[in-house]
Length: 314
Image (tube, rainbow, N blue to C red; front, top):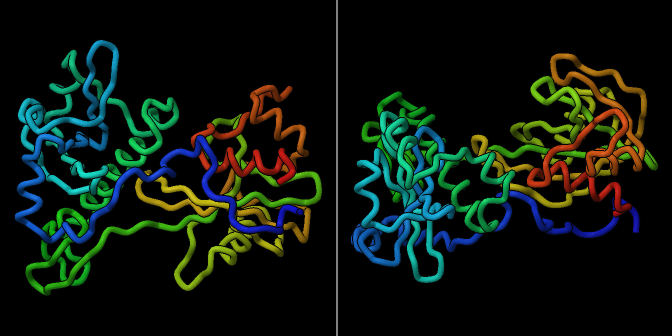
């Protein structure tokens, strides 16, 4: 079987944010009585964020992202509380703490404030818990950027336990968005195309990527973005697997693309560099043994796993 044959693969082990733990229980989002009772139930737990940063309980060297109700008061009054779903029969909520609480929380010995990317890269929690925290971060991030109705400009209000914003003036309903991003590895025989964005370390190369545009399939986005960034044309596209990416709220759609041209001309407005790499070089980049010191994205990132598929020969 070749690279461009076969069904989607499903999320590989180690792929960050890809293992969902919760039943979203969407039928409970409008049930005010149930939500009120669930917030007070002893088995309920809360994910806490402050200034977009997860707040973690720290006890005897152990980190815990889930707070019981009786510990919330010590964190401060939440700006917003959202319902995330159910873990078995236990409800999970997320609270967003006031930004001015950040320094006080940071100074406490019984808490740690660790950014979301570090949590995922260090594998501090199970994949399911990391997914839960990431979902809370993405959802709060959407609310912070969509406080006004895009139809009439009136301040909107949170509804459906955090899964909707409603305009009190024109009655328009707004729902959390996820931005689809095509991320692809273009293959030409025994070599692949990798690029380096200006924001990456100078020694790190990765898959090319770009947002899917309105009216566009992700296959067409793969071909368009590859051509825009490198002038490489591609033919067949194979979807592999995807990854929720809460920075701030994207869905990375992992693909392979078959090169139909090979001469690279980069667009410096898009990327800093792009090169063809053979299989041994990519293997060395993944293992951090490349003679030029070149590296790949970390294992929690979807690009790492796409590159590993190329190294393994599908």
